[in-house]
Length: 88
Image 1 (tube, rainbow, N blue to C red):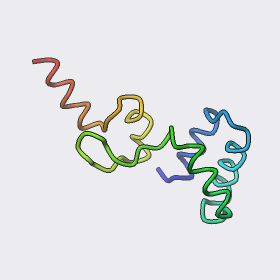
Image 2: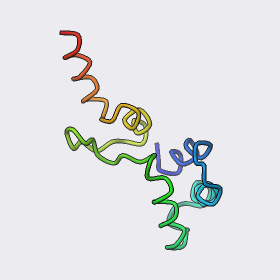
Image 3: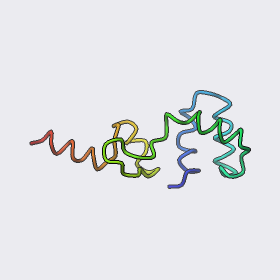
Image 4: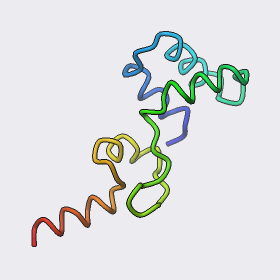
């Protein structure tokens, strides 16, 4: 999944209409086609939806796994380890 695809997925969850509009523009035209002000607004406006690295292990998180990682607070590997530890 690309950043643009991820943006399309999270657009309905963005509360700020300005950020939502910029996210739609970025999803349609690409992040690189935004002005620097739009990029900054988007990056700060969607910060709650982005987790680039797992806070536990430092592993990079893909866009496919990002929503679940944000929900769990860590990557799928750490979640698996945690589940395994709970089962023991």
